[in-house]
Image 1: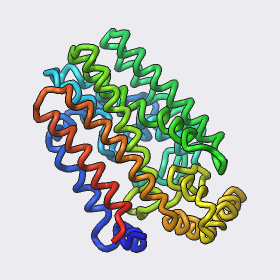
Image 2 (image 1 turned 90 degrees about the vertical axis):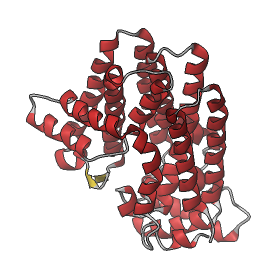
Image 3 (image 1 turned 30 degrees about the vertical axis):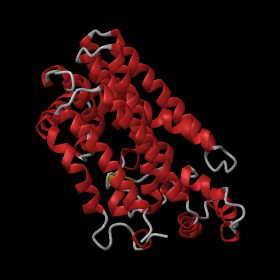
Length: 351
């Protein structure tokens, strides 16, 4: 068991600051462009409704890594696309992602997102539902300016699959006999397809040929799968100040991630025998057992198993990069993989 995890990731200087630094190297390549995107995003969410305007603006100003727009930008720049041609796409991707987070927070009854009160907590579930719908609808409006059927189909299909992923997640809450494949199908829809679509649409706008567009789709897909596994590890191992929401919130809600499913399968480990019972207690809203349940998952080897699985998805990303031209954008995308691997090591390495 990692001492790092026992001490909470952010408490001997190994947490929030270090995790932020992992992303800085590749972000320098898109720093100026993301600044332009911030202004464009603000302009894109103007509304005559004061509550809607305030809620949407608050979500945008709460920050975030803008990872999906950055991936689309870098994917397009591999083939020479200009920033001005990409801004509607980049903004649309961020609005789709942000709208989905608003919907997530309603389902999860979450109070915090990125360290700030959620829209549903401040304005109520009904208002938050409309805010999320507005953001996704506005994204579709932005995409329409391209009059490109391929972009429309890609993002519409992605949004539909994201809805299916959320439904599957809700149906799987607290279902201890679900398979690893159930988990993979869920995160594929919820997360990986938007990563894949971001890279695909960037390459499409840049005029890349089908072989390379498909390669960028696969790269984004595998990155998205790794990303969600790592994000689930953070929920189990990090501190609230590091992830902007309570530690173990997913487990509390009954969202059983890969590490938890692994721990539940360690039937020969007598020390883990109580975990199914603790999860049943969480189902009954006995949240006092959450720390014990988290400790059992951490002791099971589940974090290491999940980390290795994420690493295999990152290896698939590396294979796709052989089709791309050498450039600073390719190096930046390689830096993304390096940063993800360092996250995995930080969360799972035993010291």
